[in-house]
Length: 460
Image (cartoon, rainbow, N blue to C red; front, side, top):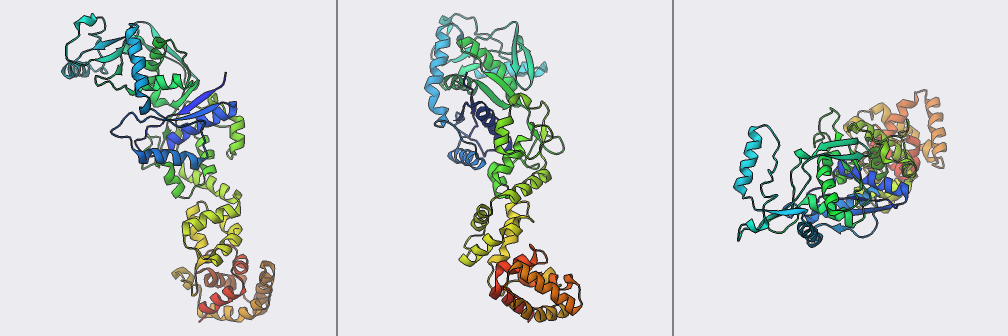
């Protein structure tokens, strides 16, 4: 059997972090088994679905490096097929017309509320003769679900889960206006797309029982279900925006790398021993949906920051330089060259691309560069004199990192001062800040003319 999975988001907003993890788990499981991964946009909620949301979902998946097989399936476009299946079930006696009015349904709802029970359709049209239909009143089509016994799902994550059929009512397949319901559309689409494994959040577990019954009524093979626990905030509460329940594009804008997000999302509910750093290649090799835990995972932003710092240090310098330059915008050729040459030192000090951009900015500045207040505090009259005295020694070197370090160390020995008394004001002069990559590296990247010019500007 070829494994076929799908990610089926509703385009009513951005691709949030929980949805991204669901997509990742589907993708990894499929790639691990050499199967097919499909993307379906469930846009049946016409009032809330937007083209912008569809764009964000697709862009988010692409940024994460999650690719899909075949064309994107748009659920709303398949509405005629969904209606066809509902009418076929009606013709076979596995579904029926229901003429309940909104007032009758509200009465059932109020009765259930008064009894402290969930709303359940009472089946009053289930066994009525079709001839009893009300003229000029468009009916809905309801599934004739089993009323006794149990529906059992052997979930790949949750284990065996059972519900008594008496608590499940006859769900609507086709509304009075002829449009299919979400619950019905999902089953038809999954069958037609030959989905073998439905991997999704455990907030869909209750839906699975009704959908299981629909599969049986249609005589279709039921896919394997795997309902993954949701992601919670650090405090254990349901994830919300205050915890970081943001769109994938927000994490991109905050400066996280896609490989970081893949690794981090993977570890939210799945693990491989004590391994924390897991490459995508390893993830594909090791991933099995059965290894996903049953407990909710907790979002941990500091952990995400540390993981991103690791991937920044491992990333190709040229790639990072392009990402930084893209964010800085309007960088001169000289500034570009400095960022490229200085990236090794820059990335060692950053945990996000935002920090990396801030740290790299001084390489792009034109003279005289701005000096922060903290940096100005280092440029005391004594420090300025030391820098002025040091400049001829620096000018005499070949401006390699090693030669610059030798010149500075020789100078401090001769002047009988501590290295920090020279290095700190030198950093302030060259970078305009009290912190930077190694100062000898910075001077070498800036080059002779620029470095000596910045020192001269700072010592005036």
